[in-house]
Length: 479
Image (cartoon, rainbow, N blue to C red; front, side, top):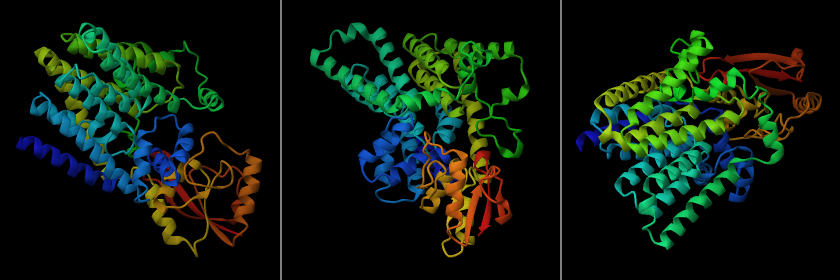
């Protein structure tokens, strides 16, 4: 009991220190700003239609931003959610060593904790679902309610819930037939309504959906696409960042991708990464079917998606493996336990590496750029951010909107589906810049003839961020 309390308090304190040193980046700021700048739930729902995510995290942020526009409170709520997850893990039947290694692993301790996204909610509800199933697998309505909310967190959580339901029906069909008609009807209604609501929120309008898919021109039977699909377990369960990444840009890197391995070697490693969890879970039919069901559903969906890349996506496989491990633990062989502990230890090392890097370096330069702009600003001069992916973090910290390159109007979060032609953008930008004697410009790419460079003075560059995409240079424009 005392060890569990110590671990729980330690997790929260380390997480609190972590968010005090973590500068939010584009993805965190985007959803925070949508909530902050939506004055009604109806406006929130409309703004989220282009984001491709269910709405539970956005609704929580909407409530948070009714009380404060400071993104720190989003981060605080997020680590509280993670702390509840840890409290549930500490109540499971794992050994103390297993619990500690899992809790302080890369995904639960860092990626889905220090970085404030909807993934933290997904992990909480996934772990809570398995914990509830283990306690009373016949409590259908309770499980259905958890599945409903789980589906409202992420596309991959929706796939998780589908895999769980299919496995549950296959494994417990005889017990289901003994349930009352009312209980079955209510449970099915809750689950299906959750899936439909989630799917409606995830899938964007037809025109925007076609545009999203068009970002990827890779053939469906290309080696790149096949490797992308087969390697999901390798990238998630056996994730190792590139510790030697240049200028500490370790985020979203994979060590094995730096080795220039031949395609057949990656194929073999990917298949081994699938076979190892199957070997570990083989003694428990539910855990094995559940893991394989999620794998098949996930890769069936992921295969047809654009070649989007993010370790946060693959981390779902690690969390699914942990969930299946919680179910199967009493029946896992000694060899399986040893291999699992090695996996947990690997992620434990990755977790503290990422955490220490985030303490030492700015994750995003958005906060430092914001502080610098406040310092050098003359008489509240206007700020123009020429790369829209830089705007959300700066807008969140400075609590204002800036010239939007998407439409020439004041914006905070990105409008992904909009883009002005360069000629129109240049005209709008030039008119806006010349409306005042001076202005500040922030960019991380060349101006591409959008601005008369003879009127621009470079002030400072910010190139120390872990996420290189938000490094930036600040200029002053003189009319």
